[in-house]
Image (cartoon, rainbow, N blue to C red; front, side, top):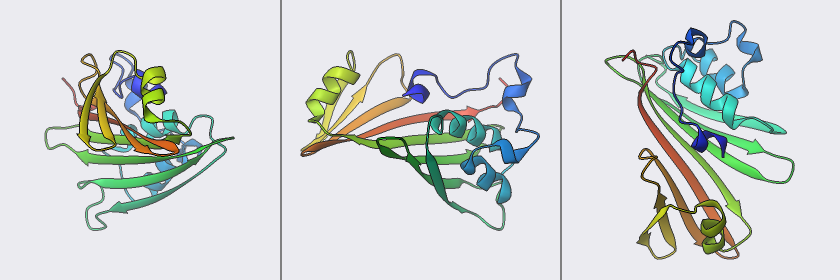
Length: 174
């Protein structure tokens, strides 16, 4: 998926990449919801990730959890249902404002494929290292992408696919 191929980060020299849109109504349903509950510091991360992950969807909806007393200083937890023309997926996004600036973000995209996990691994994860966790659960890593994992769960007749990416201090000035 596109978010695994492009690390979530601010683009150096492009100040617009860190700014929320001037018109939040042009943002995704997730970005709109985060803005509505008072997320400001981590809003650019929510906006950038959701713009990537919501591309080409037919419909989406979200559920959020946040600290109502300090929405901009505490974590935001979200789960989004993503409906495509012939499939659905779940996006879990967690943002945590970092004390030194920026935000720590955790993105997980959960989907399934109607084939055995060994076929998914063979076609989508060449070059990845497989580490079995427990029966039917294997985590795949690729050394050049140290903050990303792909977990495959054998659930015949399908394979559950969990793509995970972590970024610390996203948007902090270096």
